[in-house]
Length: 372
Ligand SMILES: *Cc1c(COP(=O)(O)O)cnc(C)c1O
Figure 1 (tube, rainbow, N blue to C red):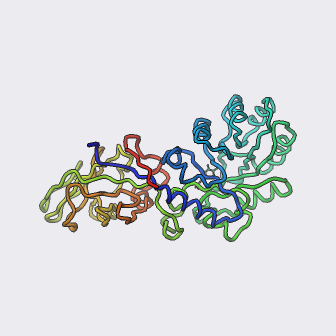
Figure 2 (cartoon, protein in one colour; figure 1 turned 120 degrees about the horizontal axis):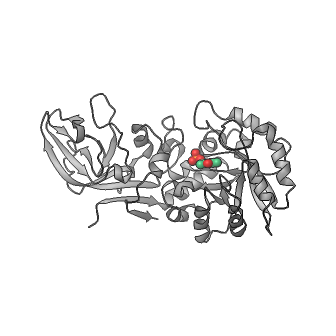
Figure 3 (tube, helix red, strand yellow; figure 1 turned 90 degrees about the vertical axis):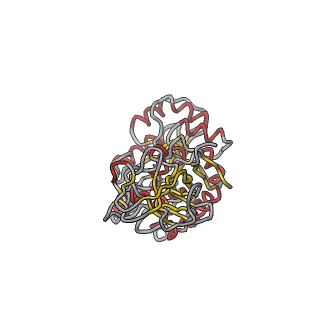
């Protein structure tokens, strides 16, 4: 028998979450963002759940080839554009849309031979100061692209630094609107957080292509202010393992490396076949006095981690779960087989990070099963 750990991908939950994105911006088209191997889910595994998308947005040519190999003939967008001139050949061959965010990419296009003009997404740096042309350079970049026979449609785009936080997007929306005011073409600005928080009240956020990522994968972009229940999202990846050992300890006994947990009295402890080498974060609190509990579901019931997460094992408290024991199902995040939910955002918070990082870090050694 293989080691009893598994990640389950929930196809219907992916489809549900994508529909939820469309509710936020009913008239927009939606890119399903599948960079980072569909946020750790696997592009091939997530594809069925996301096939109602209008396009797939991703980072590199290898991912684009995988989407085409799945038979997808609709739009595919390279979110960072091409990295060198010869990448444009594959863009032509596969019909990829690509982001243009610096001058050299325009030079490369101008020197590129293609039969069919490319659709490009011209990116503005409206304040995040990562990729894109500054507002004062945007029009000139647009004019250069517009004059190239290699270029067909030009979509206007920007990306928000604070769509999930208190600063919000107003300052960037203003910069984007002003610098693109009378330029023709479709617009694309909204990531998950902007779609959920601002698309309802601002039609410029709803236009014309939204780019939902994290929400599609069942993590709330603004947790803990709002959880997935609030946004109507469902977990799409569940990490489940089984109890492979049980210990009875007495008051004063310690558990695990560095003796981080000391039993205050008699306790039952379950040893779970999941560790940091599976992608579970090692840094979560392990039951020390004064730390918040790190939740797990044991046979669908909430318990907590006690003792430090090790490479291959986690120890959990079974004291109040007399029916739990060897072979009990432990859900580290996502949905238990009985349906109970432990949002990945709670684990991410315990680890001082975000759902994105945990999803992307699912280890290759974890077997993955795709459920309808
Ligand atoms: C990753 C990414 C997105 C998706 O962001 P989420 O926060 O996951 O919704 C949208 N647009 C761009 C340019 C991105 O790089």
